[in-house]
Structure formats: structure tokens, C-alpha cells
Image 1 (tube, rainbow, N blue to C red):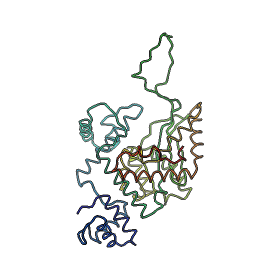
Image 2 (image 1 turned 90 degrees about the vertical axis):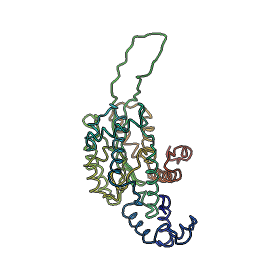
Image 3 (image 1 turned 135 degrees about the vertical axis):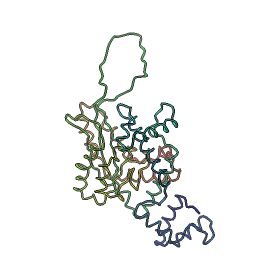
Image 4 (image 1 turned 120 degrees about the horizontal axis):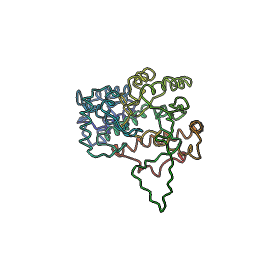
Length: 374
């Protein structure tokens, strides 16, 4: 009998709820599933081995495949993510050479993957956060593992440092390429506008108890610049790690980041491994991989950035310095009660992901957000 992800999660819960007794956990599962005694699904020794693997890696030891097939699948996801990052950038273009440099992959391999992607999506339409069928089991597996980890350690989700970065523009920008405005008169007036509006890129991280940041990607002026792996690694090394060390939380913090290409650059992975180790990192290219295309599970995306932009843009902003000051002030005004509420809401989202087989869940949450989100 092959155990599903849900059955494995149930077994883990039963194991801990019955005094770490594998025999009782298996007997209870057989009763729940209507199986006769001794008919499976595994031996007590096999369950203990699965528990050992789970406690060490946070994984149910469910693998999508072995050898070349798994490597190709991961490469396709890396290229697709890099393509999406490029499509949402200011330039909106990318090349096989650029992706190959970012991912340390041969140009020929990137081109082959791009051809396969284009065959699946032949139209020039971008769905930046659309879930593809392969994403659903990954989201469900991640949510199951997340909830199972809570059975082992109730404090686990409260120690996660949820992180992300976002652009804050000084002025709103609208693409008018396909707009046509008709008027009764021709005033022969021109209004010059910059090609790219000034902006700052804000990085922030928070747990259920405290906020780290905000940190800003800026140069002289300040003038923002393109974020790459080296600059991201520098921010983590020079600002995040010292801030956590000052609080004394480095050894207890679980670091989370999404699957953006700059987050998995080699220097970044080496730095994270040095300070957190594989068992306390939630990220693509690590044993506990963040779910692809899942901003609905990251509190920075489903709460922080929306809240912050609402309060920051409540009035006119004169310059980038004022934009930075406002962002910093409003982030520092967030209470620990709000942070705790947000993380509790994240746990609710993981539960809904499991109940709905990895599908989108926003339509279930439209009327259930905590009042402290507003």
C-alpha cells in the first residue's frame, strides 16, 4: 500500500499524540481507513524511520523522481522563475545568455527549456502568479510538512523570519501605450514625464515577535539600482545577520525567502548555510523548498506590502528621502499583537491549502481576515 501525503501527515500526528508509539499510530490509522489488522500500511520500524527523517529534515521523504528527470524538472522551474522575474522588471526582456549566467546553466540547456515553455504557452500573455498543475502537489506537500512541524514544536511558526522585498515608487506610473484619449479641443500642450519613475526597493523581515528592517537598496542620493545576488548577499551579511545577532536570535530563527533567482545565488546560499544551516532555511534549492508562485502564503505579500503602501501613500510625498522615512516610521509602528495575528492567519492559509489540494484560497479568505490587518 502506497501512503499519500495526507496519510503520512496523519501518521506523524498520531505518532506524537500517542506517546511516540509507532504501533498505536499504525493501528489507529488502520482503524480510520478501515483496514484489517496487519494489512499495512507499513511496519513500526518503517514508521520510526520516517519519523527520524522527518525530525531531521522536516520532510516526509516523498520524492518526485530520481536522477536526470528530477534535475531537468528543477531546471525548468528555475528558468520559468527567471523568465517571470524578467517580465516583471522595468525592461521586461531577457535573453538565454542572461538566464544562463544567473542560473549557472549552459546556454543550450536554457534555450531547450525556453522552447519547451513557449510550446506550452504560444501566446504573448504573462500570468506572473498563475499556478501550473505541477505547483499544486508542491504547495500541498509544503503545507502538510508545515503543519506537521507544528505537531513536533508548537513554537515553530512563531520563529520563522518571513522576508521579501518590494518596490515603492515616488510617483505612480501607468502604461499608456494602448490608451487613446479623445477631446473636443486640441490644446497643443505637452507634459514631460520621466521614462522611469524614481523608486526605492524595500527589504523587510518579521516574526511573530519582532521586525527586522526595513533595509533599502540604494546608492547616492538615494538612487535605486538593480538588485542581484551579490547585493542581496551583502544586505544579509552586513545588515540582517548583525541585527539578529544583536537581538540574540540567530540560533533560533528560521529564515524564509521566496524563489526569486537572486535569492538562490551561490554566495547567498553559502551565507545562509553558514548562519542558519539546512534545517532552518525555507527556500528553493534547500531541503525545505518554498512553494513556487505562492505569494498568497507569504505574510509579506498578502499583508505587509499592501498595508504599508496604504499608509505610506496617505499623502503627497516630496522626495525619496521622505518616502524612506515614512516607510521606516510606519513599519516601526506595527505592534507585536498585529505580527502575532498575521502569523496565525498564515497558519490558517496553510490549513486551507491542504483542504483544497494546493489550489488558490483567496476566495475563502475575503471575509475572514483579522481586524488588525486593516
